[in-house]
Length: 292
Image 1 (tube, helix red, strand yellow):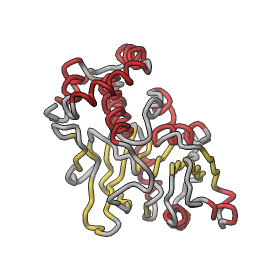
Image 2: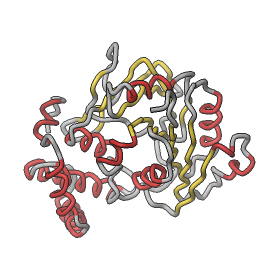
Image 3: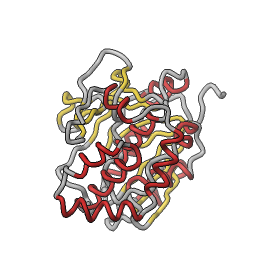
Image 4: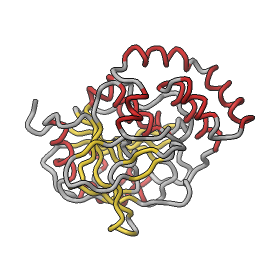
C-alpha cells in the first residue's frame, strides 16, 4: 500500500446555497499529507448551489455528478461508484474542517484499528456542543454519545461525516439502495456493518463543525422516513422488533407502508443479509444496551 493512499471525499448535496462553496473552501484550506479527490453529487438541486464549480479555483480537483433526485442513500452510493480512492469519506455540504483531520481519521483505518469511523461533530453555532457518534433510543431515535478520552465503539456513525475503507463499503453493499428520499441511511449502514462483523468507532481527538438546521432545504415526506425505518427493520430485525417498529406510527399508516415495503423485494434482501451476517440483531441491541 502507498504511504499516503488516495482518499475520495464524497459530498451529496441538494439546495445547499452558499454552503457547498464554504464547505469546499474549508476543505481545500486544511493541511493534509494525503492526495484526495472530491466528488459532489448534486441530487436535483433547484437553487444553483453547485453552479460556482464551473469557475471554482479548485474545479480541476472536483468531480460534479448531477442527478435528478435519487435520495440521500443512493447519492452517496453513486459518489462511491465514481470514486477512485482506497478510502471513502462521506460528508455533508455544511461542514467546516480542521487541519490534519483527514490524516488522523484515515490513519485509524490504515492501521486497522477500525473499519468505519466518525470524528466528533460540533454545532457550528455552538462549537463547545459536540456529539461523539450516536446510539438509539427505545423509539429508535438517534442520541449523541458523550465524549470518551480515546477511540471508542459507537452504535451509529453519523452520516454527516464518516470514513470507511472501500473494501468494507463494497462488502456490505454500501448504503441501502432501496431507501427513499432521506432518513435512517446512516443508522442502517451502521447496523449492517456491526452485524456483518465490522467495527464502527469515534475518534474524539478530531472535531468537525456541522451546521444544524431546523428543517431541510428540500421536501422530506414523513411517509418516506417511515418507509425507510420499516425497510431497515425487515432487512435486519427479528419479527418481534419488526412489530415494534410498526407501533412507532399509526396502525393505518403502518399497514400501508408495510405493504409497500413487502412489494419491493425486501424479503429476498433480508434472506441474503441473514446468510451473510456474523451476528444477529439481539447481539447488536445487547452490545449497546439499547432497549428496543
